[in-house]
Amino acid sequence: MPTDSSRTASLTSRLNILWRSTAEALPGVALALILAVAAHRLIAELIPVVSGLLIAVLAGIALRSLGWVPSWAEPGLRWAAKKLLRAGIVLLGLQLALGDLLGLGWEVLVVVALTVAVTFFGMIALGRALNAPRGMTMLLATGTAICGASAVAAAAAAIDRGDGKNDDGAPVQSAAAAAVAVVTLYGTLALLALPALGALLGLGEEAIGVWIGASVHEVGQVVAAGGVVGAAALATATLVKLARVVLLAPVVAGISLSRRQRRAAAAGGEQGPRPPLIPLFVLGFLAMMALRSVTELPNSALDFSAEVTTMLLTTAMVGVGASVDLRRLLREGGSALVLGAGGTVLAVGTGLASVLLLVG
Image 1 (cartoon, rainbow, N blue to C red):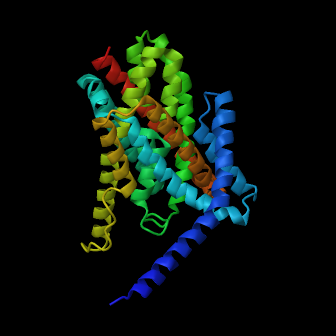
Image 2: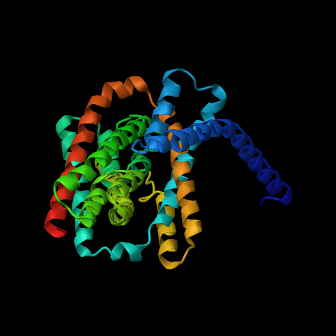
């Protein structure tokens, strides 16, 4: 039976390990934060149509490719790519209140469900037709159908077998960085095109807002596109986009369940290790959504939370980009670009058809 002195020694040892790992991570996290501030506060605000997340990913890729990642930054960049990204997803839940989403009406909720389903399953089918890597296909499908970089991170956790690789033996983090870059690229093109296309088609502000919210990939991109159209379109587009974000948990659970079944079949029915059906940070996201739904939080707190969420995700994207194997990315990038383009066409086309049929 452990004595008080052994318990104290064990606790001291754990605290020392925690302190050392924190001290090792801080310099790299600081580097990622500096680049994230530059991406979000300087470049993205000067050029609003360019996503700060995309700039952050490209900055990380450039650091790695040019050999400018110092050894002292490696632990922190890895930590940021995983821990800060998951923290950002948890806080993203505070932007969602179920009462607001239900107030959209059944027609709009059907538009969201149809667009997400057609985009996700259509991209899975297209990935098979293109013979694209299975892991990359799953990441791109989730990011395009749900909410961009955050969804890619959640899907990456679901397909990771525990050693940083998927069931095919491919590195998950590198594929996630490529998927984030592709999703944010096409989301940027969509945010530029949809406001103009909506006006050409003679759609009203609310209908354009629903189309933008159902079709554009990142939350920030939806806000930018909706703001171009007008205040009513901005409010509608943001709510519709957040309705898509709610579907993150069931989609990730479905990915995890499918992976379990595939591994069991490959092992002749033996279960083997069973990771959680829904990653812990996705449960945190649901908890924050529940908190927002049942509690009246002040607007100042919500605005602060949204700003912190953006900075956490942007900082994490620097770390994600720095994990990219550029030679592998260039080798596999062609199919990813084609698949991302196909998914964007599916999202935009399904969103428009649903809006015309159900919203008018």
